[in-house]
Amino acid sequence: MKPEQLITMALKARLNAYVPYSNFAVGAALLTTGGNVYTGCNVENSSYGLTVCAERIALFTAVASGERKFTALAVVAGTEEYCSPCGACRQVLAEFGGETKVYLANRHGAYRETTVAELLPVAFSLKDIT
Ligand SMILES: O=c1ccn([C@H]2C[C@H](O)[C@@H](CO)O2)c(=O)[nH]1
Image (cartoon, rainbow, N blue to C red):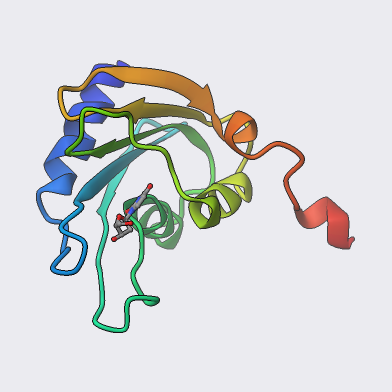
């Protein structure tokens, strides 16, 4: 799948964001090695800290559906800037592999390509606790 297609899916998922507090809607689309795509949007909460980011919703939805191997993730907000995953999402993404490509996109679909490992070098992982 082309990055542009994954970004288009992230832009569509973004429309479902529940963001009454920040008004900052984010969309994510995660491509599996088998070619399936799982999407997510951020879902905020009145207790603020219980907010879940778009990236983690996409990833957890995928894992809950039996997926564990991922090829690429697209992340997009409604900004001119490329949207970059927060630290918590980087750690959660790293759990399933540093080689996953990440397309940091802007509202027009322009993007910068990176990887989970580049976003979180020297990640804490299973090997550190075994
Ligand atoms: O990569 C990011 C960065 C932020 N947010 C959400 C969390 C919160 O709802 C809003 C503002 O931080 O954006 C995401 O979903 N993904």
